[in-house]
Length: 244
Image 1 (cartoon, helix red, strand yellow):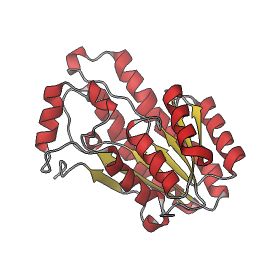
Image 2 (tube, rainbow, N blue to C red; image 1 turned 60 degrees about the vertical axis):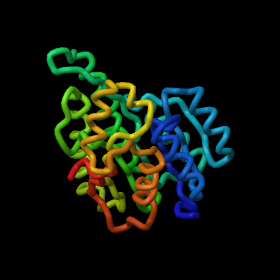
Image 3 (cartoon, helix red, strand yellow; image 1 turned 90 degrees about the vertical axis):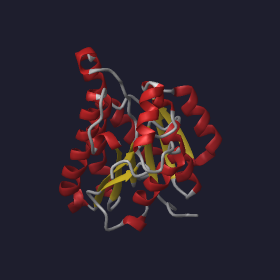
């Protein structure tokens, strides 16, 4: 316990699923956490349950103005910023021929622009704090080919690339940037898949089971903590061996 004592974190998409697990684990390990999401009722309930160590604010990650609000809120309430988990994301499943431009752009606005804005928003507050850790949640689909998810794959490969680029640029400020690549995790995002697609993805991994949100949160915790102090630009798969 206490692996994040004294640290202040933002977790986007933190109202449920992987983000909820990350927020819970961060608080348990001593962090103060700003939970953000578009799911206001679930986010507020989680923050209330976690007590004084957590606050919630509604947040569209594709909005530059709302990112400015979130950063100001975190600093006003907790005094600093040490960790960002760019967890918010959406998915859409369809054959390429049936994938609309509107769906493609919607995915990019959240999964790609949202991560870019998050990274950029951290430079000033983390530099002022003497450094920090940004963890971008990409996907196994950001490391390997995935059928029927061309927009999602484009966004998650973008997150992989942005992680590497930002790691090179921000190291001079003491800011580490790494990505985590979940496999098939038992969260509401699976609703974007057909049951047959989920089954096929699970069978592709040597461990042949769904991952759990807390298994992702444990990897994120390591990257947020000082235990990973010499890691930046890493792409960490947590996928039951699917990338092998």
